Length: 441
Image (cartoon, rainbow, N blue to C red; front, side, top):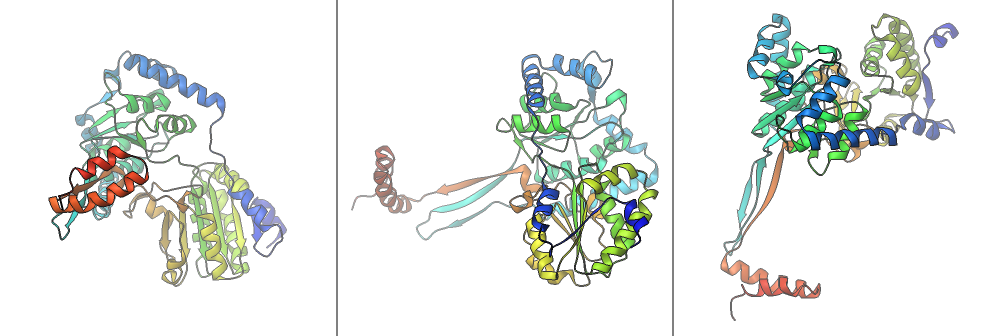
C-alpha cells in the first residue's frame, strides 16, 4: 500500500514467520487489570462505610460522586410504574427493537435451563441433583450518557429465566442523567427494584444490604475500576460473574470478505475504549493490505474516531499466518472474547476452536448482532479467560445440590466401603457413623 496511506493509521503488522512474532504478540495481549493500592484502599473505605452506615453512606457518596442534591434513598429509588412509563414513552422504533431483542434473548436462554435429575440403583438407593435458582440477584449497569440497555437485557433476562425470585438493579445517574432506554429494558427484563446509585458503594450495598437496598446472593454486570475492585473485594460474601477486562475481537478471514465489512467489525470493538483490542488474522497477505486500506479510508468517518485510532495503535494488529492450521493455533492461544470466522466454510474450522467466548460464523454474522439481538449472551470471558470460563447464562443464577437417599441395603453396602476408607484416614467417628448402618451378617 502507499506510504501516505500506511502512515495515516498506526496499526501493527505481524507475521508468524518473523523471529520476534511471539514476543510481539505477547506484548499485544498483555493487559493488567488489577487495581493499584490507592484504588483498593479507597474501595475498602467505601465498603466499610456502607456496612456501618447503610443508606446514609449511600446518600453521601451519591451527593459527592454523582453531584446530586439528594436527601434520602427514597429519591434514589424507582418503582415499577416508572420503568413501565419509560418503556411506554419510547419512540415506537426503539420500543419495538428493544422488545424484539428481549424476546430473542429470552428464547435462547430458555434452552439453557437445566433440570433436576435422579436415578435409582438396584438396591433402591436414589442419587440425583436438584437445581434451584438463587433467591436474589444484583445487576450493576453503567450509567450516565454512555448507558447500555443491552447490558440490562443480557444480565437480567437469564436471571429471570433461571427463576430468581428478586432482581435488584443499580445504575448511577451522574448529574441526574437517567437513560430512558435502560429503564425500559429493566421493565422488559423483569427487574423488581431499581436504585439510582453506582460505584463501589452500590456494590457494597448489594453485597451487605442497607435499610433500603436488599442484600443479594450474586452480583453481575460491568463497571469501572472501582466497581471491578469492589466486586473482587466482596466475592465470598456474595458470588460475582467475572472481573471483565477490555472488549476484544479476533477476526479470521480467508480473503473472501469485503474489506470494508472487516474494517468496521474491527472498529466495532475498538470504539469501546482505548484499551479494547481488535485483531485480524489471515493467510492472504494482499487481503490484509486491502483491509488496512479500508481502515485508513473509513476511520475518519467514525464518530468515535479518536478512541478507535488510539485503540488500534495500542492493541490492534493485522496478523499474517501461514495457513488455516496456524490460524487455529492462534485462536486457541489468544482465546478471544469474540471470534469471527469470516470464512466460506466456517463449519470446517469450528470443531478445532477450543477457546473462545462467542463464535460468529460466516461472512454475514457481524459481532455487533451478538451484542444486541441475536440471542446468545454478550457477557463473555475476556483477557484469555475463555480458556476456562464461559458466557453468562441461566446456569450462573442457579445452584446444584447433590441428592443421596440410601435404602437400608444401600446404606449397609456403602457403609462397609466408607468404614474402610475412613479408618484409613484415621477419622474413626466417620467410620463408626457408617458402621452403625451396616446390617448384621
